[in-house]
Amino acid sequence: QVQLVESGGGLVQAGGSLTLTCAASGNIASFNAMGWFRQAPGKERAFVASVTSDAKTTFYAASVKGRFAISRDNAKNTMYLQMNSLKPEDTAVYYCAAMRIDTGDFDFWGQGTQVTVSS
Image (cartoon, rainbow, N blue to C red; front, side, top):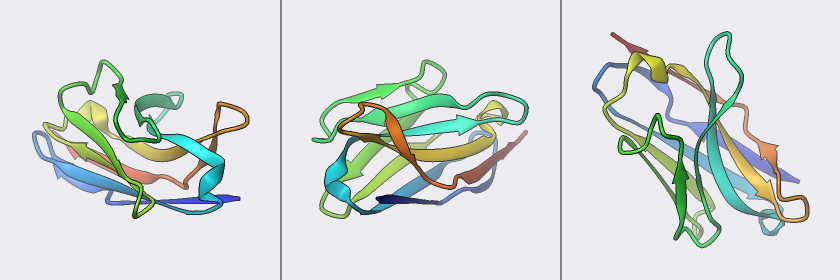
């Protein structure tokens, strides 16, 4: 099994920055890509960003491209999301996820961390 634990959420003013961290443990060899998703109140969970297992390729949702940066440190089994120029519409619970190798799906999830951006 894989355990994912997010940290770094909080309250920030519009235009500010936050860095989210996701620490992975357990059967690390069972997943490859990792990603961040978010769920705002009353909305479905949505893709934010992802990074391949070699940390060389990243993907972003259009709404965060140019403002957010995803990275991972495989030596530390940790993934990050640097969020800059935050907007009130970025307010959501942010979830860390890992893609299971044998399914190709984001099957492993963290418990989520709240990010609130005030205007």
